[in-house]
Image (tube, rainbow, N blue to C red):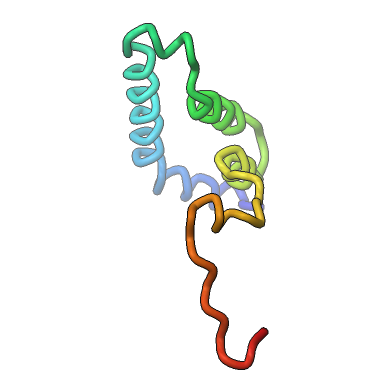
Length: 96
């Protein structure tokens, strides 16, 4: 865990960049909300993911990065190559 001095150093180093990223997210959400009304009839699940991730950011303590990565991740599908119509990798000589 960071001591208060280390936390202050991180904040000093990253504050402006973080502020810019938050403003960028706000601008994207504003553009979505200003889009023609038909998008409200069939909400895109990605907007829900963004909102869920923003809520996760407000939770105290470490682990937010992992939580947010999981929000945007798909569950593992062992047939993912078939769904993406990718060929199976060639087997190395001597492996079966």
